[in-house]
Length: 239
Image 1: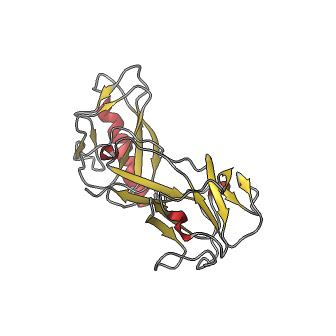
Image 2 (image 1 turned 90 degrees about the vertical axis):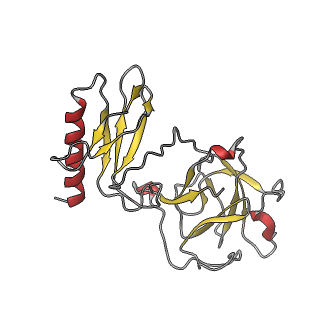
Image 3 (image 1 turned 45 degrees about the vertical axis):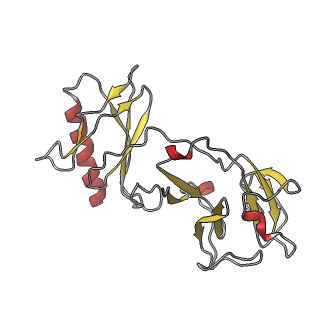
């Protein structure tokens, strides 16, 4: 048996046993015993994770609930006070550390399948396209993903070396953001920018801004259409 799975299985059983004496019950809804490239935790690591779920008609305060991978020490990790709403879920990373900083909810600022502005790469492309102030009114619009030849694209375009995609969104109060996760499914490489600042790249030379005709380092197939998971990149807000 995979040692990671054994560790998490113990945690699952102990968690359920601890919950028996409590007034309200929470469920272990999902377990990932081999998180390799799926979801990063707040430290940027790919720890295995457990999702808990509140099936009750009212919120539950998790203060005093325990989780452990050691049957001799059943309350190895104690939950801080946190209200898990009715029908809500919470992902717990098996990071072997006590971290009581909890984001009270997550929001998806950009959805891959929504409408994007896009333009095929060419020598005439204005390299300022990455900047917030760029006017993309003349660009085409289409739903993501945008590509050619895979049969799984929201918008199909003629074969091209590269395609540039832009999406505008507004966050009223950025001070409320603790951390963010950028997730990407790609073929064959990409570089992502936020307000002109690079936030992630994969399978493209690691130096500078690529030109419109820069090729990926090697072939890389998208994975979600075949049941795979997206790559994720942890974004940390700096004060």
